Image 1 (cartoon, helix red, strand yellow):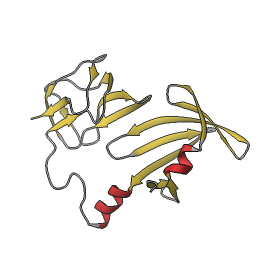
Image 2 (cartoon, rainbow, N blue to C red):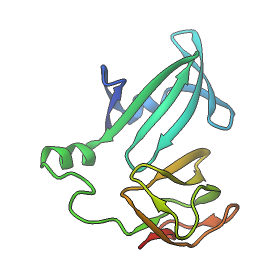
Image 3 (cartoon, rainbow, N blue to C red):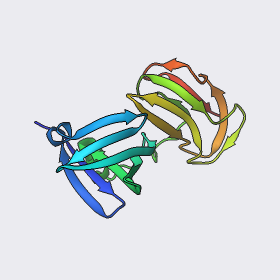
Length: 161
């Protein structure tokens, strides 16, 4: 059974993709977050400009056109169908690494007041930079990592008061 994804581009175009079709994509990485893509004998230059790994939202530049892309897998669709909104049932007090990676940048300091969606930290993992935004308004209690640190999946990165 192949895994399906619902892809929404600019809240206008909707695509259903299967893992099999994604694996056939003719894309070559040319630089950090930059790719050369060949589709139906037409070349494209693509760059991942920004990513919100937790919300599965990405901003992509393709041949100098900016696109906002959101991706949902079967579990995401089931949660939405059940009416469960992620993050509304509990207060987030800590940010943990969702995967192993390298801390590229930390944009906050201990004691700093942050607003929801403020940039907190950038983690490089699987050849992509993942920006972690604040899930809520709050004050930074602790920062357990430093720029240049290698982290494991589940490792505490930032804790809120």
